[in-house]
Image (tube, rainbow, N blue to C red; front, side, top):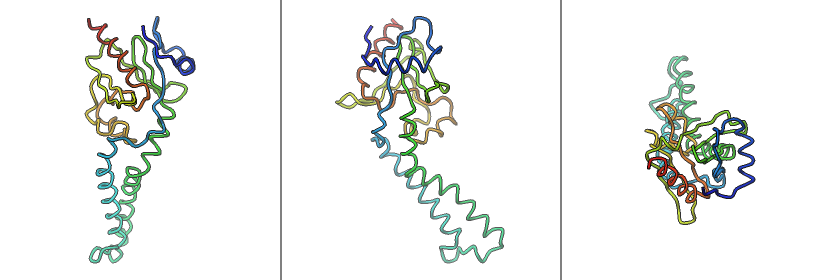
Length: 208
């Protein structure tokens, strides 16, 4: 069985997982997403969505504060003049997060996310206590997808994508959680080609 040599990482991950590994389960690769890569090609597609949301929210707040002639709410009853600006604040904050804040959150999460490929499962967890762990058995997978550049850096997707895959690895993954299981994938790893080759062969062997 091929094992990608990453002994320090495997040792650390094994201690994090503690009793989570199954009998005779062997770690073949472990690592983290590259936290230095924050902006991806997919983010270029998300930018119009972010700008649209943020721009509309800011425009609403501007109107609510009386910035547009004919929409001056300061001449309205006190309740309306107070409620309208307050109503727009959460949307403005979300807009600022979509445009800027999500990139800081992406880096924060990448530094705390760990991926593990074993001879039986793929696992992804956040935090050194592995309390937020998700695991998928390789013998249940019908397909594996990849998006890898010539250097070997990229993403390996295990199984079907989430219905809201547009928000995968974006800092806006909370949209995914509203529609079932998020996509199971190793996002933005440096050894994506090797991981894909080993996982693909394991899945083939388990189905043959």
